[in-house]
Amino acid sequence: MLKGVLTRYAICFVFLTLLSGCIRNTGIGRAITPEPTPAAPLNPVMVTEESTISLTRTTTPIHLPTSTFTPEEKEIIISRLLTGDYLCDLPCWGGIEPGVTTTVNALNFINTIAMYYPEHKTAEIEYQGKTYLIGIYSNNNAVNYLMVPRLDYSMTQFLQKYGKPDNIYFFILDSLPIDIDNPYQLFLFYKDQGIMVKYDGISPKGGILSLCLAEKLSYVDTSPVISLWKKGANLEFQDVLSKYVDQYYSYSEREYFSLAELSDISIDDFYEIFSDYEMNQECLQIVNPNGTP
Image 1: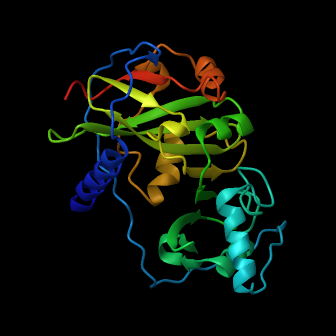
Image 2: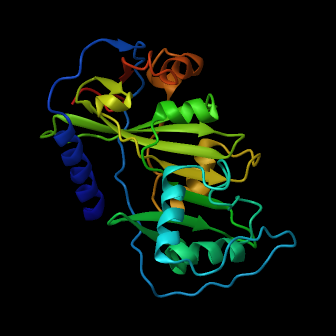
Image 3: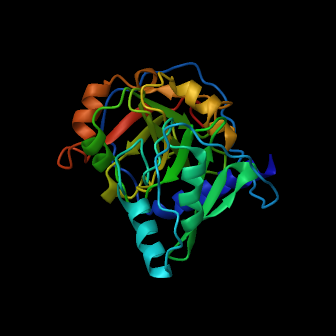
């Protein structure tokens, strides 16, 4: 619980620093008021080094590089993984495709570029003086799920590359009385493609929240966390949270709202506006499901 509270204050502090002025009142969409519900804090899993894991192969492995890279080669590969679509497009990442790539082959590659912690199914990548967390979940012979960071990948860029999402969900952090800002998380959910991308942002606190999603406005983090699972697995948003994301964070316990529940703007309109750099200059108006602070 203390970790969740500290995480909340950390988020608020970072976003408070970003807001040096007021966000304009003009926006897109009319808010639709739902019943207010409480929100739960984040609950990250701590990583330790004490564990082993039993690995086996499937009958159709995808062979990945297993040699030891030089420091220069390792830096280049990590840079390509964190800043681009290295070797393949999502939901494949660095040649690892959920539901296809064997656990053995995936870890052979991960171990050449990162420190792997089997007990928590995570790996830590060092890049330009910072540590980035990767989630690698498998309950059979093949990798089932990946949770990976992506640096400097704006929402507009993502929408242009992967198209219109099947749905859009929000988690609105229940701000504290002393806060002047309201952090939120926005999820683009691609059911058929096996992709979910999470962006963190901030809005001035109030009954109506202004989500300014253009990266140059600096009110949204342009380095999202991406969840990947087997393409065509037919998983719903809540299924992905409870089955996979909960292996790392207690996300399924929180209350989420779809775009349709918080605004009258459609997914088609959202995609048309926010996939266009010229149009993506207004702030999306949504109701604060936690009520007026």
